[in-house]
Length: 148
Image (cartoon, rainbow, N blue to C red; front, side, top):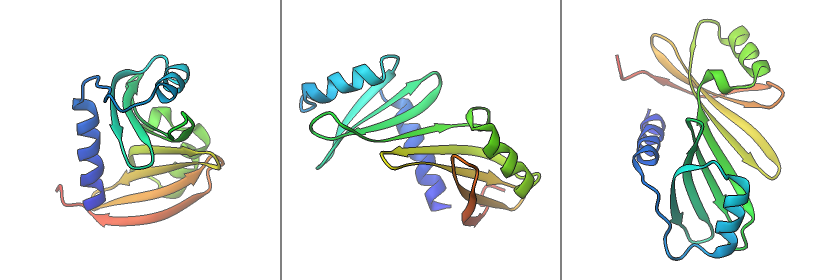
């Protein structure tokens, strides 16, 4: 439940942000970002020890993109609902988890992997299921719902 609350808090902070570019973001990173995400809206930047992170929205999907100092894209994280999830994954989730509702998806793309963390819920519990692009499913967590 703590991870779910943290995820919701992070999503709210992303949505609440306005466009802001810290003076520390270098031109290589900004150029790479604009080339890749030319339709980004509500962009906010954060600088960390080893990377820059842009939080933004594209077509109602919340996105975080991490860049190294040279403008190389390290990782992206996209947050969305069932309608945007690959149909083969939805089909396998419905078959394996029946009537549990798909609450939200976190898609993580790195140089070597694309994975999907799917949050499901039923009357009593939250479930986190990891999937690859082929729909191979692995339940990683289960929490009792505290929102009842």
